[in-house]
Every structure is written in C-alpha cells, then in structure tokens.
Length: 296
Image (cartoon, rainbow, N blue to C red; front, side, top):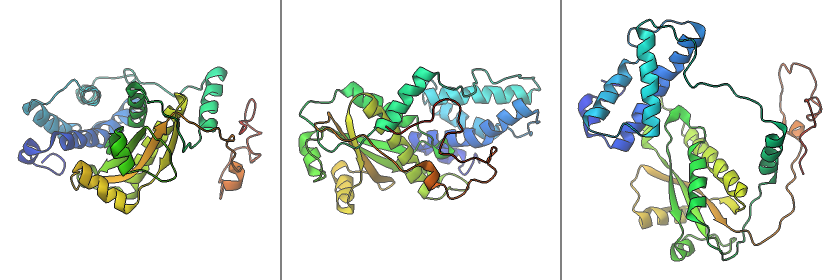
C-alpha cells in the first residue's frame, strides 16, 4: 500500500489523479518533516520518504513524464529526503528563500493594484488576446492550495454563442468567461479529508489571483456565480464527469465604464478580537513604519 491505494490500483489510476496523490503524499510525508529535519535538527524516521518512493516508482513504470514542473519539484524533495536519511548534514534547503519586504516603489505598485481592483460589468467590443487569458490562468495556478492538491479546473469560453447561452443579464458584451471548477477526486484520496468548504476556499484563492492579474493587465473583470440551472447546463454542454463540480466564474473584457474608486470600512471596525497585540495599540495602521496604507 502507498497511502490509500495498492500498486495495482495506482497502475490503473487516471494520471491526473495519480499526480494529485503524489503531490499530496510528498507534501505531507516529506516536505513538512524535511524542513524540520534541516532547520531544527530532528532525525528522520526509518520510513521517511518510503511511501512517496513507491508512488513515484509507479509513475515511472507507467512511462509518465518526469520533467513536469511539479514532478521536478517533488523529485528534488525526494532527493533531499534520501540525503538526510543517509546522515548527510544539509545546512539549508537548496534554492530556499525567506520572504523579503518589497521596496517602496514595488509596494506602491502592489497597493495600487490591490486597492484599485474593481468589478466591471460592461465591456466594449475589443477581443481579449489569448496571451492575456493565459497569464490570468497562470496567476490562478499560483494560489494557495490545501494539501497541495491543486484541485481547481477551468473552462475558458470565448465563443459568442456559448457566452450567450450562459450569460448573466447584468453583464454586457463579455468577451471571456473563465468557469472555475474543482476536481473533487483530490479530496477522496486524502487519509483525513479536509472539510468540503476547503475546496471552495481553494477556488476562491485562485479566482482572486486571476481577478488581480486581469486588473494588472488593464482588463475589466467581474467575479460572479451561476444559478443551479446554469451549472446543470454547463455540465451537459461540456459533458463534464460527475467528479467535476462547477463553482463560480470570472467574466473579462475591456471595460467600457468608469467607476468610482473603491472604499472600504476600516479594518479596525472588522476586528472581533486581537489577542496579545505586541504594542497594545490598534490605531488603524498609524503604528506601522512609514506612511499608513490609505484607501484611495
């Protein structure tokens, strides 16, 4: 057994599902422990990395590609695991890094993007280049993902007839609709499955990344939801298997309307509790170094 599955089961498994299984096992049985071993001097157990090696042996036996980015990342972690099991002293994770603060210019650009994003519901007739859509999808793929399962799946609709079929009556002339779904099989193979809401959180994180990337490219986007009737229609139209769950979507185009700058209530008004704040001061950001971040 490697995780919840036998070798024979993995030899017959859909490669996409096997890849999710491999990522999840690397994440939970190597990555977590490896950083503690390297940085805190803990000793690896005798079975450290064994389950992942069994799954990866199946991956190779099936002739599946080993040069995919996530597979290469997993192979790096497997190699590090084997080194520490041999007793090698590794001072730092090769290629590892700590978060670094943005310089003032980059921080200004980030705040402009974050605070300036709006929901646009009316677009002009200009087409959206495919490379822009690809950048948006790539941004979604870099969102946080529970158990590193990366369960989000996307349907990109540009055909005007299909767009009309699944239109929102509030919107006008959308050029692209990115339908966000989840592959629920990922959670089926985790030994202690996270709550179902985590699937929706994963999709929400991906969609927020995509909305910000759309805005960064000068596009107008709007995050909205389908009716159950539309969800059923999408399943039929695209002949989706039962394990694909349609969740939400992002509509895109070149904005044909100017909107007022966004405003928000203060974060201090939204705090229910702040236990153990080091300086004992909750002054709406005034205690931070430099200028307070202002909503413009």
